[in-house]
Image 1 (cartoon, rainbow, N blue to C red):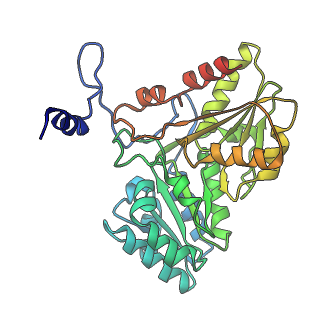
Image 2: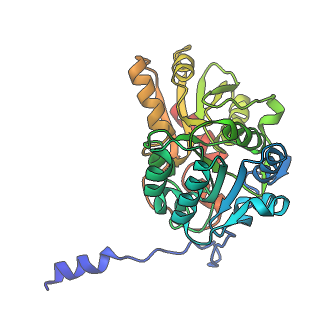
Length: 348
């Protein structure tokens, strides 16, 4: 082996570096962040779990399953209230999905919970063949979406929307906060087909309640209007752009925020109509890879509708992301309020 090939072989497996502070100490974090974006905000504890319990009071078809992640998907609230309607499947996501499909065939409405990486990667074929192709009413509710954990690529579901939105028959949701998680859980229970829903768990910030927001499956909704910039956002990035809009307002930049909780089916009519108003800069914002998510979906809508406006994306890079403290990572990858504000100022 020559020196050049030896050099290439050595450099191919360069180990990851551990982030350190100015004094040289390692930056650490708890991966199971319970309260994302909750500092200084009103929060609601386990909104998904409590909504499911409330549904089960009047619907005996509601059952819950998890793949060894009872507490970390907030399903422990349901399991405590209805132990005879809860199934602990262990670390076997494919088995859980297959069991959920069987329950759905027997007339139940199963809510199957795990982490987003495990549903979208490990169990994809089982979801496709056992649930989506058969159009069964299984609700797959997944915690740790996008960059909501510091554990690194094994737990960061930065590509789950790209994976799931390509699956026929599957509705894909990315709710913003506690208000929307509660309302969306009730809505998908009534939806006749399969659903994949991202989940913020633990003590979840309540942001949309102050705007009088009411979730509507398949609909985008204007949270605030503005003349200069139109944010089109989903998930917790709607919290971020609402905060950024307030900061930009102080600098004379008037921002609208169009919240898009349903990624599939996408509300193409509303998105195209709002983007066509007044020549605003359109900025999509998502807690997902820049590849295959909301931003690219919106860009396709605008092109097909003949809406030609300035367009930018705020999203995670097409890469395996670092591990570390979430505030540091959010700054690093451009999805913090500071980063969003700076990006918009640079684009105007």
